[in-house]
Image (cartoon, rainbow, N blue to C red; front, side, top):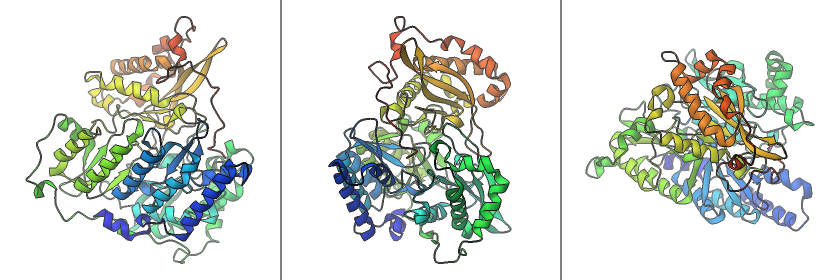
Length: 591
């Protein structure tokens, strides 16, 4: 079982009595209380707080805490710990799975943040460096080691990178945040083109290694990564990443935070010059076999469970419930290991309640051998579910409200938290996402057409692309537009993005008042169905017909209504008051 394997590694050990961790949390508590009293670190408290994974929210005196899930892997004990924190220290009792496989808790009081840290430490989890100008949560392909197309399991290497850079002096005061991701196959479920550095599993001459990409990123100035190395042996991966970080740390922009990501440095120097600097830096580092570098923890490699199915020990497979076949078609993926499946647990808009997390932790023990991961698609992934147990698992998920079908399809809308909690969120991305989901699911099968069914919608509440709108089939990001003395919420539509393989940034189409976006979406799909070629996907159709044609199709939704003719256009989705930017704060992403 994975629980026992993980317990052998540092990842899952009880760290609450680790003197380093304990001292770190105690110090955070002292500094937080001193700052509350008007002293302590003063203005330096904010970067200190961020380094410990604690963001300020849009709402005064409330914090968002981001919990690292390295390579997305969790044990049932860890999921229980997250659920405890959501239940005890957040009024909404919710967790939010992010597009970088972390879990966020919102509306935490600053005084409660150390309590959250201590409970997480008991389960071997941390918020340290989940925010701030550091190496963030290291993400990885959630199907690594179990999908048919895997070259090899990247999990131990992602784990080694996460643990090597955690608290490492080399990355405590970087120009900006730094994001690392791993893919186990050319299908690129790690979405490498949009990361600061991405590592794809490859084999060359019988050796395992990585193709390394560098300089990708989204935000207001998106960029697709360049290839740095076609092949780096697995034992050289930490040196490679460190050399890249050292070059950027030395030459990256520090005065203008909006230009401080590594993508701007590579765009300015060019990949050839950056590669020369990287190779020079690499030559100064210790050899890969030096004890300075962290060895991968191969106990993280998952073997086939020996106990067989739950059904075989409990009277045979359960009788399927209503909705099982639809759920199985979209949410259950056959593994490369015969008889075993991976199941996506769809989390609407990435949200999950504390009760659901507690229940899911036990469901995972029963049906998935304790193996659970988060995914960058904002879902949970249960690995090693026996085929005979799929009906019982579906029933157990139905009992806790998590048996929705349609994972990784058009109804599985991705969003950032947006203006609901984010200080720089302009519009309610979650509100629009919920409305689109409701329309899609209520459309009586209209979206079952395979070329529509598999489209991905991604929504951000501002241009910063935390919801990955730049790399969506259909993307939206929030903005405000003016009508006289009033402002109203709107979204910019983008089409044809792709975060995988070579990567492609979506094309900006037009601004649409937020209230009209769902109608515009339905009109867009109708125009696509009517005008597409045989087998032509929406991204290819949009490029063929062109931006001007799509603007003409959606022209009726572009007009900004007068307030007295359509006052609801001045109210954002999911809100009950007139739209305003007065409660926006200063963003902390660049602090």
